[in-house]
Length: 399
Image 1 (tube, rainbow, N blue to C red):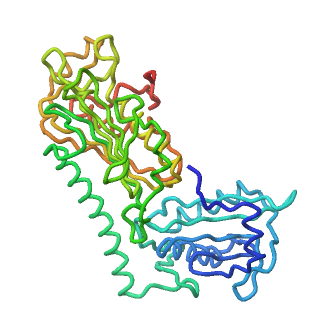
Image 2: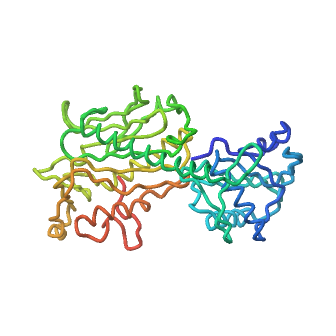
Image 3: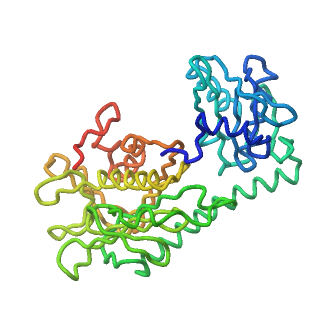
């Protein structure tokens, strides 16, 4: 996903021409020196102050006078090496880790570039600079960075806890609505897979009022375990529904994009009973032609595609929940040698899998999901998912 506000040469020059002064979300540096401990600490204070406040941008290669930009100087460095040094310094010198920081260069002539460091407003603030025992918390105002006092620090921790609780409450309310059949389609009484994709900004204190849903009006979004469907608007945002089988069949699914960017997609067709048995299908065969792990991978990739189209950036958390799955088994079609090992049945009706955090604007979904899929296989007495090779690489062909 591309940051819609990403700087280019024209936007850099506009800062000079329009005399855009430093402010709460913008700081200029003529150069960046990370060699000395004091210089590195000062830089880390800058970065953490942005993350603990409203986010912001540090632009290296612009001279300034009294906070106002005077000239684009540029820096002549190995950008890749410089970015690695910056990312390493921030990763090792600030705790907890700042998620979603983005560094890139803007070429201004043949041998010089401007370095842009974009720091998001953090969802897991407050961040503490720990490098060389600094042990300090900073935030930011229109006058620059400042050290948080005790009251401000306490409030920062409370805000972080509030964000976490709001996410949990939303997920719980939505799952309860699905179980009570008070949602968009009737998923029936058998097992269902539900995926929630939650951009952290959706619950931030500065959350957008809404997203440009009209962009999706002519798209063909794909609910989990289903092909393309038409979209229609509803009170919550925009939805794509699917019905597999004959009219009146209980096996339904949908993908709902809420106005704040949250996505909920669910389907019960994948976990329908077959020959009187309820199982999580794990390999394709002539009877099923499905694989629940594969469909979860594809559903998350669909969400990422939608976010890319809408310009919604990471961090994003994905939650996978299996509903109505008590006494479900695990079926490895065409692998009769595994039948004995999979006599175990799931012991709960609601199986909430570990969340998946997308830190950056790209994600190798199948690889990232392996530890989560492993937890399901653990419930059936196996050490991990058999859908991966010995190197942890997804090995089943995608449909």
